[in-house]
Image 1 (tube, rainbow, N blue to C red):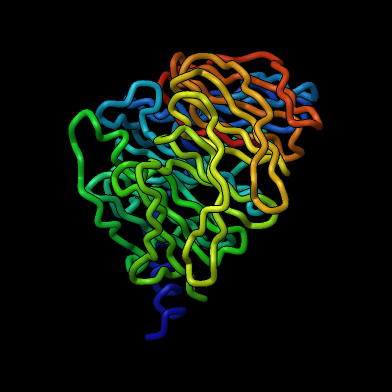
Image 2 (image 1 turned 90 degrees about the vertical axis):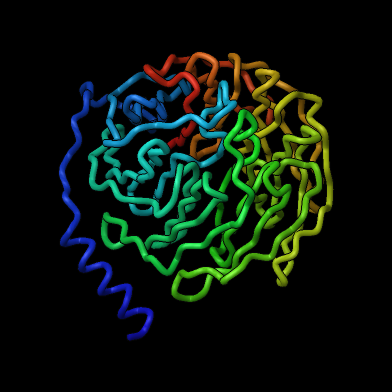
Length: 376
């Protein structure tokens, strides 16, 4: 049986076996807004996604809370960043779907997005232990599982549902750590390149490398990745500039590093710029501007990207304690920083020169230590 036929067969079985239905939720009446922001609580007693209306001035107003049906999780040693990852909540804008990991249940939940409202469609196994990050490209979805040495599990989107493809599972082979260093020694993010031809995984201090898998025409991965060593850098999260350079938040030197990805899947470092802050881990791109979250300093570092991939510092902006995941509105005008110290989301206006001006903040119920935020 060919690969396409196997996927079709798996899809039929999965669709027949999946129980669907809207999860219980609390929601207020819809408001006229410029968009929405979704925040994952990662609460160990019951994970949820909290929806916020995004006003024309960038301010947020809570619109509803939507249980995922699973539990959040906390890695050993973590304080403000229980998943120690980027991308635990992913938005598929083209198909109106939201994906949330349930680290404590080893599952992923799928929601339909209707403005500021969510409809729970599905919850299914991630084929590994402690999922922390999701990557989406076209009809492909890959989930990164952090524990047990790390693994990847691939899914194909069929309509508004995910179908797990067993042959799209890859073990990362990292040394498992279960003591208080676990949150620094588990992989941090899975991310597609903009063209979807490769899949990148950051390993943080577990390997101090960035693994690059090739994606074949069916959506499967190469048997093994090209392992790009980034000695002592603790590569945590990645983003891509408009010219395809890979920009990495490095927690070891607390720096933003830029790499060129070659056809041989090798990464070549082109620049490295210190933030001067502590625990530089998360990153988001807004056009030519990059913003890195510094959990240890409670701040955001801004950078201007250059044509050759070099980065020019724009300054540092203070946040509430424990800056973690960060997102920007689709038009690049507003930035939202999730802070794990007290579960607060800080709101900022982005000027044309890349500088940030505080708009306000909201406290997300039950989200202390939580990670995962996206804007629509």
